[in-house]
Every structure is written in C-alpha cells, then in structure tokens.
Length: 102
Length: 102
DNA sequence: ATCGATGTTCGACGAATATCGATGAAAGGG
DNA sequence: CCCTTTCATCGATATTCGTCGAACATCGAT
Image 1 (cartoon, helix red, strand yellow):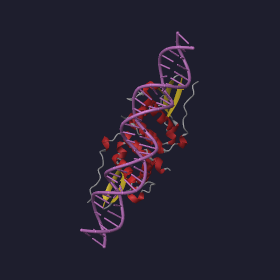
Image 2 (cartoon, helix red, strand yellow):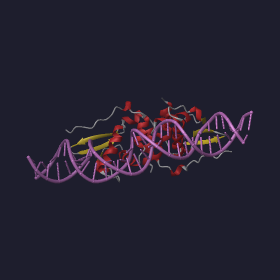
Image 3 (tube, chains in turn red, orange, yellow, cyan):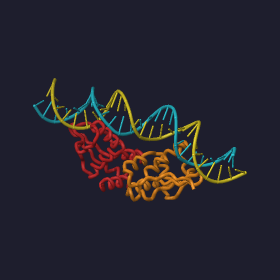
Image 4 (tube, rainbow over the protein chains, first blue to last red):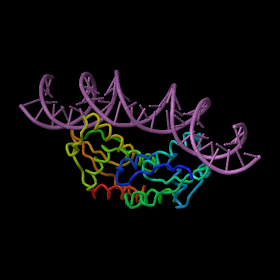
C-alpha cells in the first residue's frame, strides 16, 4: 500500500490557521465539494487552476486539519476530517452551511 | 462632527474575504475584544504590534464588513457589525463562541 | 524493464501582506 | 493661534502567498 500523507494533530492547530486556510476562493470550492461528507477522487475538484496549484491548496487544507487524504494506487481521495467539527465547534458547520446554501 | 470612515455593503463581500480577515492572530484578538457586543475605544486593544499596524488590521476588519468604526473627536470607537451575523449565518457566531470559550 | 497515468515537489515569478517609523490630519484645550 | 493627543496614511522592507511549468515519484499495466 502506498505511503499515506500525514495528518496533523487537531489539538495543535490554532483557530487563526483554520480560518486562514478557509479564506481563499479556490480552497472554499474544494471544501464545498467534500461538504457532502463523502470521499472524492481528485477529478471531482474542477477548479480553474493548474494541477500543481491544486496540490498546493489541497496540502494547505490537509495541514490545517480540515481534510483527510487517502492514497490508493496512483490516485488520491479526499474527504472532510470529521474530528475537525469537534475541535472547532460551530465554525466549520457555519462555513459548510453557507457554502451549501449557495 | 468628524468625517466617519465608510463601511462596505455586506452583500458585496464574499465569504472567503471574511474568513481571510479572520485568519490572523492579531485580528482575531481584536474580534475577541469586541465580542461582548459593546463599543470599545482604541486603547482597549492591547496587541503586540505598533499603532500603525493596529490601524492596518482595524481597516482590514472594517473593509471585510466585520466591524463598525465611529470617530468621536480625535478618538475612535470600534464595535462588531451586528448585520454581519445575518449575512454570514453561523460562521461569525461560531468564531465568537470559540474565542470566548478560550 | 518500460510506459502511461496521476499527483507531488521544485524553482521561479509577481502580487499581496505584515510590519515599522515618520509624516500628516483633525479635533480640543491652553 | 499654537500645542497636544489620537489616529490614519505613507514609504520602505521583508515575508508570505498564489500561480505556473518542469521535473520527479509512484503505481499499475504491458
């Protein structure tokens, strides 16, 4: 099985970092995709940037504790980290609600 | 009466901008001060940066629609913009809750 | 072993940001 | 008027950030 990327301990992540990670239009679109709580293959994320830039944003979200990345073969599947709801109560719910309301 | 700074129309502010404005430790401390829904004079904001930098962060929050600034004489009073709660439902509540819980 | 597909990392670039100190503007008090 | 207070703005600097294309790594299949 492939080496999996590492996911930070949520207790070590300051709120400002989470908000900063969410404060970008491209990343917000990524979050909107995984907001259905399902796991999504990379091709579900059709954003208007190149693939290396998408990787960069994915990494930012992962390092902010917001997403979980699972490698399977040469592919990458992304989902929300459910524990994040508990560590940043109300904040993440609020963002998801606003996103899905649009 | 002194000329008042202008406050943007909340309908024109994207969510990413609000989150980005909140995604900074200094600005988060400012928000924590006004989280009591009262109006605060500038000297209530004792942050670890110079006064011109504080002005900059204040402006960022105001332009993101989060704070209201009232000039009175040579002084400036800052408070939360209550309408923001309605435009970004749950998000702002969530942040304030997390801040006041610390 | 080679190839093709899929993502990540690297190196570079310009734009935006955080910071400071100095300067400036507006109000109030002598 | 002049001086002080308070804050905003300006100019400069250093850092971070978003972006791209090229190079690289990993896996599955041939």
